[in-house]
Length: 321
Ligand SMILES: *[C@@H]1O[C@H](CO)[C@@H](O)[C@H](O)[C@H]1NC(C)=O
Ligand SMILES: *[C@@H]1O[C@H](CO)[C@@H](O)[C@H](O)[C@H]1NC(C)=O
Ligand SMILES: *[C@@H]1O[C@H](CO)[C@@H](O)[C@H](O)[C@H]1NC(C)=O
Image 1 (cartoon, rainbow, N blue to C red):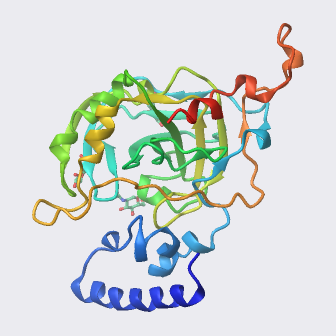
Image 2 (cartoon, rainbow, N blue to C red; image 1 turned 180 degrees about the vertical axis):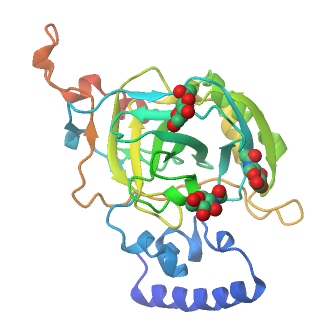
């Protein structure tokens, strides 16, 4: 841990950086990173509008502990419309993002699960490691996955678009898919990774057609859910998180494709894009609910009432790499 002196020096240094930013008219987006002096521990100090990143007590991601999950019989199955949509995949320098086309008339609605409102799909973020041991933002029992896909929607019953909903109550839903290394990729994920060589540098974007967001999800109705935040500045505490209780698969080649991306443009490529995950944040007594019914007394034939029985994430399967 850095001492107070380190932090004080860092914020003095940031003040200097910031006066340059103000003069140069550089966008705030350029002023946060995933490491070093503008990394996650400092986001809340860089910009007063991002103070929740340091002060917030309902932040994301979190480490999910199977023993502490709370079964909630009110939780329904999640519904995501199945039709295919067009959009753009882009390398933002921080992440790989798929954004739905503006003109789409047939919105993808997300309903059910823990949601009280109808949400409209807006974008997908991909977080991944430069090595296989890390990459996901959410962890399970302390284990990280090589990548995580987050599917974002905004509350279309209360708000008119994603950017408005970001800082409003019940504004955002994010469905998290944890990615495991495998020999055969999820086919919809392949549609996204096929374009990677065309978005090598920060700022690049390419059209992607006929993506099924629903098709990214694994075949399970079970999930965990908690109230948290966006995992990048401004860390707004407006996100209902839904973590699907089964991984999807990504191949080594696809992961290498992601790791070949660069943060900067062709003239100043900077560092490879990756390790773009925020570390787990404290739960501070928030409940993590699930629709996995661990009460096995209801299921004749299953004798040992262990909640691990029906969990698809097991320590055993993660330690293999
Ligand atoms: C949406 O429209 C804005 C301008 O109206 C444009 O800059 C942006 O690239 C469009 N996004 C997509 C995904 O088509
Ligand atoms: C999604 O919801 C909107 C209204 O909120 C509705 O017009 C549209 O038909 C719905 N989409 C589907 C595929 O049901
Ligand atoms: C989002 O909606 C708000 C409120 O209706 C509006 O002021 C803003 O211009 C919209 N933003 C975009 C990007 O469409």
